[in-house]
Amino acid sequence: GLDNTVSCFGGAVYYQKEAATGSVKAFDQLTIAKMDIILTNTFVPRSTKALVAGVGQRKENFKFAPYVITAIGNISDQFRDIITSNTQDPSVISDLIQTNQLLLQSLGVSHETLNEICRITQKMDISSKLTGAGGGGCALTYIEPDCKYTKREVMDMIEQSGHGFKCLESSVGGFGVLFVDFAEFVQEK
Image 1 (tube, rainbow, N blue to C red):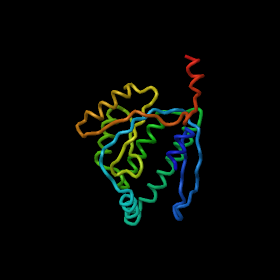
Image 2: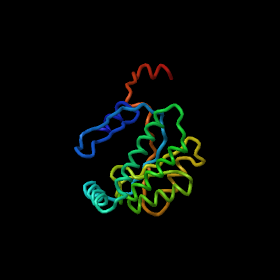
Image 3: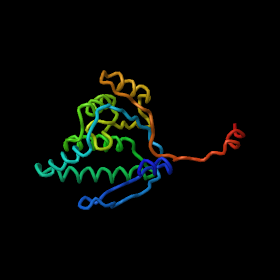
Image 4: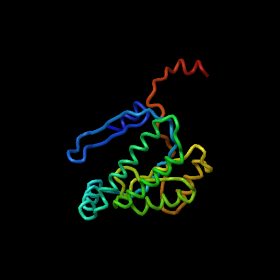
């Protein structure tokens, strides 16, 4: 799966399905620079099946929904282009993350706890968004390289908000699993 591919080979994966058939339209292994993130668990259970059905219902009920889905795809494409370029602009990455979250909210796949994490980090000029299908679960918070807050300060603000959130410091990009010869490792020390 995707998690195994990224864990083993590093970088990121750009994955896209054909809307009509569900078949894989794009699957690209991307080499990207390391980006610091915080993952926050809301501990809210969710049903991917129910969330997908809800988006389908919105597509039927609201003429704007297909345009929102197209806009989310365009954000994904622009994000891919930026993170694979040599001129990453962290403020543009943050704007894309924030805009993506707002569009996902309009499709009904966010949750009040995810929105609260976004409110907390937005007060710090930091962008967050839901992960996966949304509806609870986890949020991703992007920490720009020149962020005026440490990751620990951001995590403390989220965890001390009184909502029972648990944060995990992480990163995306960089190397995957590496084999290190222990004897060579010890000799270098």
